[in-house]
Length: 218
Image (cartoon, rainbow, N blue to C red; front, side, top):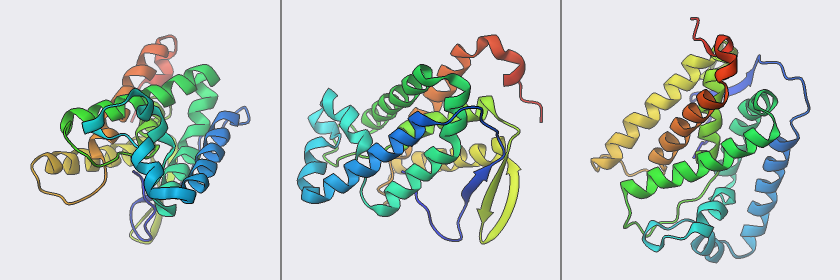
């Protein structure tokens, strides 16, 4: 999951322009917010019923888990990343491909998390796997766009490939540590990695006609 924590590495805005109103990005944000509010009516039962539990594998919960969040900070962090990066990816890919990217990245995220701990009885919830796929797409589509980022209370504009590259490095380091039993975190790092890698591959495959735009010219 993505969390907003004051003083830490966190993006605030980007310079990538968009041509169309990001209706799907906004719809996904609204849907996630409403489902979170609904989940508060019976939180523990809803999470255990509709969250993805590896030991009780269910295709239905692969999808329902993408719309559940563990708290306001979890919800806000995910929706903020979706807003910052999702609008431009939606604008670039178009609505149908954007939705495919979003949901298939979420499925890939769950798969990666599942194979790293198939016997787990802890529910996996959150939109971060799907949003990780959007980050992968953004990296290919807008590598040189500047992202206003706070790093320990300092605001700087740095290229997207650095912001997203550092983000992925953090996921990989802590994901590897989690496999070795070195972290007590409840963050599904391998879900982030799985969603991100799918986003890269998916975007590369569907954007072959725009090779020039996808070049990394640092």
